[in-house]
Length: 155
Image 1: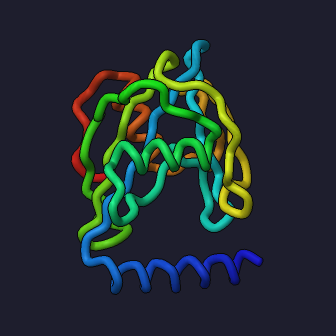
Image 2 (image 1 turned 60 degrees about the vertical axis):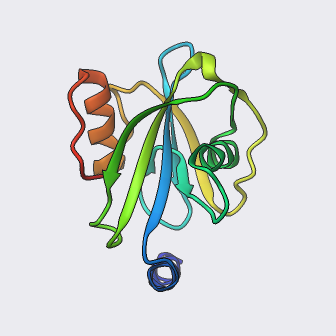
């Protein structure tokens, strides 16, 4: 199953590179009233990630973030989040960029997820006690946030 999933991911990424010379993604660092943050584990790639995804044609970045957070994490935005940084993700795709937004506990409410087949697990965790398998980029962003240090420009 993992071989099929990895193959499917490589095919999709190749098609994406050809069909979109520049890609833009959004992710949300969402916390609850207890200070926990939400992470997601996808079905098609290993590791724990901040929820998010690609900006679709005709969408604003906030519309994309709103859609992705609801679909993947059951988070409905109720306020405009703050931009934490714009990152180059050239390690994954040439010309790929990720915008990371901060969503505080007062800026969202729970909603029904729509992630069938895409998200294997959703978890609320202490930001200083991350689960095994959290991605390097996710760990870096959380460390920058916790320490209030300037962000690295690379995802």
